Image (cartoon, rainbow, N blue to C red):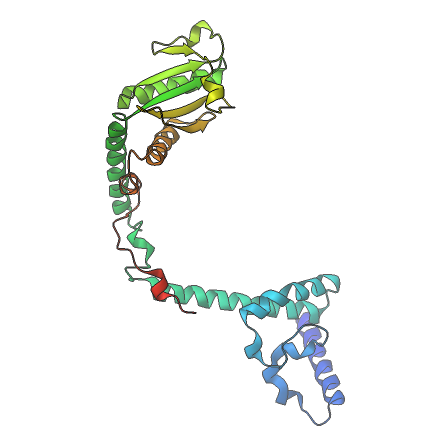
Length: 273
């Protein structure tokens, strides 16, 4: 530790001496406002030697040069210059984060605690309400949309059919399963299964199992080409119902565990050129 400190002091003294000899009428102490920056002479530095020039833009444009130089020639001076520049950037970032909190905390427009509280009990209540709204919304959707499940003879399709049957039992969706293969005995369910007569190609389905929502007028929306879990299936049905205009954005938002009842504000009003 003492050796390292001595080396650093020696380098500093040599630098001071060299600088004094190079410019006999200018003392190093008179230039200390320039900081470490005055060492560098072969880079794209600001037109004036002024620490005020260390803007975020300048740092972003020049820090790679300092890093490359320190890696190619890892001298004490080069590494120090890079680390000092990195520290300046980090200091700016921490100051920015501190001031972000100062601006946002308690601000009804910017404080994200309004959307998702930090209190556990409040989050539990949001989750409970969202689950209730999701179930109610899916029951409503089932009155307007049916489900097509497309499967083949694989075990993945077999598992997907089991998940689909659970959802149908819970929400009373009308559903038809369509297969493009002869199914093994274990895959013959109590639910209706029909042979594909061109629906898979007509709907542009390329991967099985696949799931589509369909309206009474024949309009449909493919919500999955590939196996999905039960919770994911519920979410995809909500999105499909929104795309088919069965539910609106407000209804959709009620099924999510965040507070969407906050007041909107005009972003453009707060932006300045």
